[in-house]
Length: 260
Image 1 (spheres, rainbow, N blue to C red):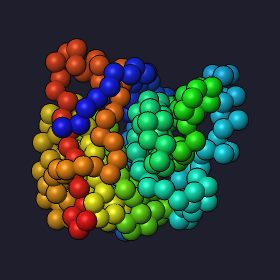
Image 2 (tube, rainbow, N blue to C red):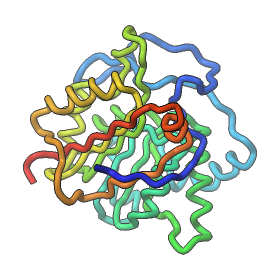
Image 3 (cartoon, rainbow, N blue to C red):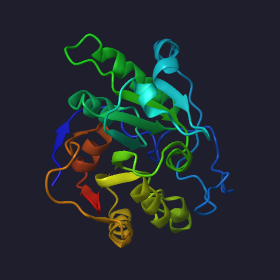
Image 4 (cartoon, one colour):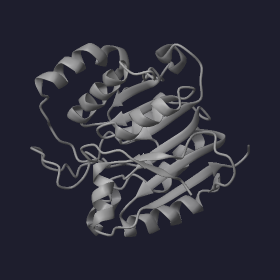
């Protein structure tokens, strides 16, 4: 069972009470070859504080890219060849920065849509530069994670995928927006190397049941046991701490890619 360490931040940015000035768009996005798809995240605008903007100006050209249609040259971006992990929905970067710092031998790409959250991640990375363990192995993509998986990463290119507290879209009419559905599991399974792992955490009981059912049905994945190729120890965010306080159970799942 994965372990957690308590580290507080501003919570996940895709939580329902996050302020937004945009309305939900029920129309499909550009879609993909798997299925016509609506976005699995709430689109929102957000202005940056002056310190956030300054950090963005300093670090985004080096550490960030917008999601696009061209495959990533991962080795060139990181300046080395190393096991690659993708974190989907990195929020303000608490888990991404802490886990990258704890595993300097792993390269981590964090995917997020909310610019202020990304700016806070960049600030957190900068703060590590004055420590004994500066984070140099984290990069950020801004945009839709499914497009990243489809268009920017190749088959069997990932050692791990992390999805921590994805938006549960609790209303039944919005379940189609949930990220972790069968086509996404299939896509993740394809992108994982044999022996690679998918690590998921959610505090939403109904979504947990759906995730477990669909993940267990993916033929290339099996519940993981043994020594994982990446750390399963993750920090506890402020959002998760609140879930604990109100008695919400945290469900964690780890699947491994069959064929190692």
